[in-house]
Image (cartoon, rainbow, N blue to C red; front, top):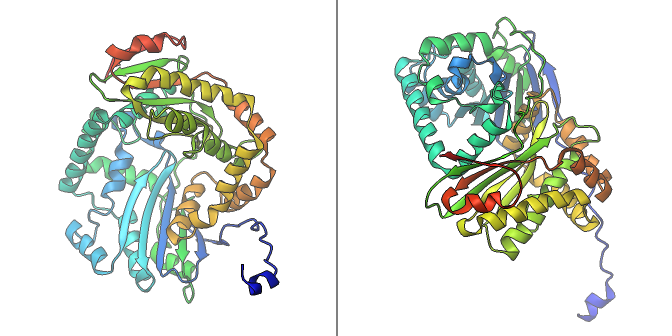
Length: 453
């Protein structure tokens, strides 16, 4: 230390102040479309997200997956432009446009340089309001989805996920079947089916447009009004959401036989809460981090760092519109299958005994102190606003949740974990059953059903 350094007192480093989500400006159009905007100076690529409430249980049972095919073909030509012309218009202005569906609805993504926002909103309007669904493009997307289905069955992680939902949820629930449909339901979809589904479900009432970026010198509401203000359509019947029922025999072990597999995939779950849970959602975010959210969390500290069985296994609470799932998933070396499963279930069960203040604080710090980085860009801000709108929440929820971290302590974690994690596990294993099924049976965790992959 130099003489100068010794003469200067080092400043105290104080804890950061609670962070708040960017301020939202809200408005509504006469057709029932909501507009929410976030001015983020210096971010000249504007992100626009159109969120349309459209729960997947609106799909006809015999055509499940139609919402996914519709979303993928929205930009494949409109009433005014062929698919090629529409693609050229997007490319000419550097516009990125896409769409996807979740269990709650349709989200159309748009990213564009600030100077071309008006043209981009016009193209978004055309795609949403007057898609053409040309037969050749529909056929191409149907074939693509059918190829995906084969791929999903071939990849252990995806195969485990599919078996998990079919085991965990009651067979009558839409949640028990793939969100993008099965071979039998997708293969029959026609352009006429897509047009009818679109007319009945893609409507402005209750939808939200989220806009984020440098909005200086922009009248966002006027721009959205210009593009979407004349969008109309009779409101779809409002059906109150309900929690998807768990299967009566969900608490069991299913072993999908994958002969000669060098890795074994685990999918383990039990009920969890939604974001409106009593006491707040913050504790469940911290729990996910503490149990299996990082290499230092309980699961990886044993299975990865100590035993070397895995590259990483992750746990977390996954909220749905109502209710949710606590899910742990990942792969291990095949020769560690039985021991890894024993240790993993023991770790998950033992967590009901409580958490230390040290690991609690580590989770609180991670969730809270990384928030400014997680929401530093316009696209993540728009994504958050659009996704929450489909659950009838606003980004004020995000701010309240982050501030709620201050009340999370070890006692709150233990109470929150024990409220849902009771040890009634749904376990799906993908691996070589001829080598490891008997060992899994020997763990005494219940009957093991062996199925082909």
